[in-house]
Length: 365
Picture 1 (tube, rainbow, N blue to C red):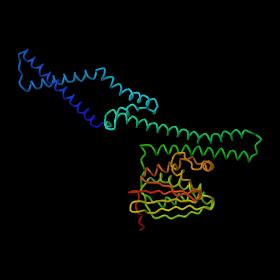
Picture 2: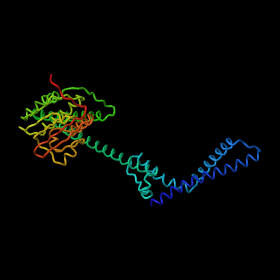
Picture 3: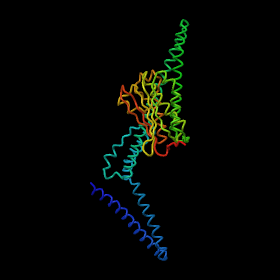
Picture 4: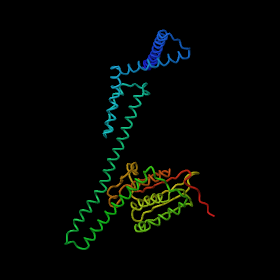
């Protein structure tokens, strides 16, 4: 096969060289006849220029005739038609293009052929666009589901409130449910806007140097009503560390992680928060709880939008599955890393690592 391919290439080169020789020979013969007829003999340099011009003209005309040859045009259409058809299908939103024709036409050694490269890139583009479309459809479906559930509750209880025979206690209970569902909708909208903002190409981080341990302690104290209500023991160990980052965005990271730990830790459980230096060029923040934990299958999807490891518990707690997606995006923007370890019935540990120039050891005067 390789020999046949080389023979084809050599044959193509010889055909081009032969065409050039034929064109130049004809040009020389024509110009010689012309000079004799007009009885004019130009100098050698001018004669060479005239011969070259006529030779190029003849070669161009020859190539033009060959390309307009019905057999050549049918071959070109044979290759181009599937490509054009595939591009038309993609433009109409159909990404299941079939270009198997080219798989039969091109062998392994022909993978550098221009048509082969075009086909492979079209197939790759169709695959990527198909994945984006699938993600878009899934996103719309998830958003619709998240919105529909609270709206159904609000409509149902609002209809129930029309009953004039309701007891004041029942009426208050229904209004509290409506208020809770409205808060869920507001939180969903807020998180969607936040994710859109974080994924914007024009987003610029407002980096500044600040005390990481102060930030963590402040967020822990801000959630004190929640963890004291459940009588959760907070085990805190924070080194004196200064970090260079967007403080407002990092607040979202710690708030979301702490809320998750508090939400899924039972009465009398323990949450530990540790911040320390790791190696020479990074710091680590670990938030561990003794909560319900997760199965191994859930860990693979924990940072996906709208994913909920436990649908029933998340529904009761009011989550919408966007918090950890926001956390992951913010950590990625800071060129850091977040990992999660969990064991069902034992607890969960989130480890945030910030690497490189994003930290420096705080020195106490």
